Length: 293
Image (tube, rainbow, N blue to C red; front, top):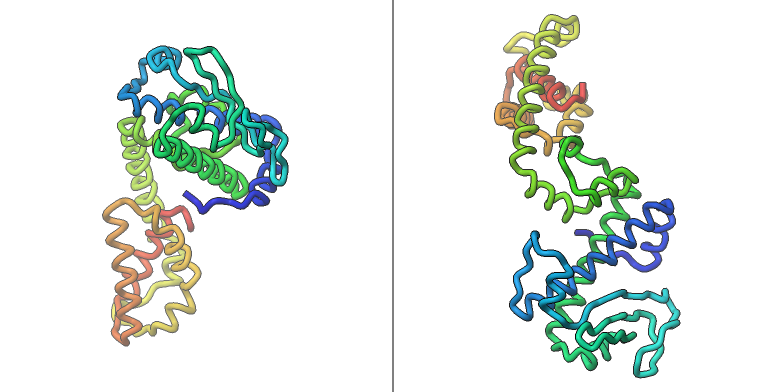
């Protein structure tokens, strides 16, 4: 999760969203906070939430204070009024289901009216803070043009997640982690097949590389003396590319090759000789593997 954004930064990033994205995000945040309220209240009363039990059924069991809305009047504004008469920027709209009464409350009166403990209210507001951090992450990823992992395209995602993706709103790391856990088996199968395809493609490219004129231009005898400075001058750009994308190297054989390339660089730095042909071969294999060549 990123550090909290300032209000000014949040407002700026909101301006980058279109109407559909803004409406969806606000609705998602509102629902998330209502769910967090319900989760904390249910936990307090010892009620375990199950995916096959509807929210209405849970509320029937709780028959307690239900969060309807959290209103934000904006920086420097206090357009709302608490039941006690004080003006508010943030206003909690809560409904007591048993009494069938709705109240507008500030955070202080929230405890007084609902008789919730200070500890419970702190748990709830901390949960709200984490939801705001998730909002910040989505906004930052949107500005940075975050791309959806291609593995997710064929997954049977929920309607809300699919809508979020279709309108071009990034997923948060919380949502990504949830998808990874929910579709662990499917994603393993997809990624294993993709790795097989990548290795097959690598072998084809490597064969082409060995027979191409490019190799002859880099052909050197096994015992040719080459210095660290010469290698850096010739291949620094390629090595930086591999370093930038090394997190994508998952195949054990390729990880070994990357370790070998780095070891040879260190050997040269110490003034030792290396097998330059092997260095070139492994470096280009890595570039092919990462689709950088």
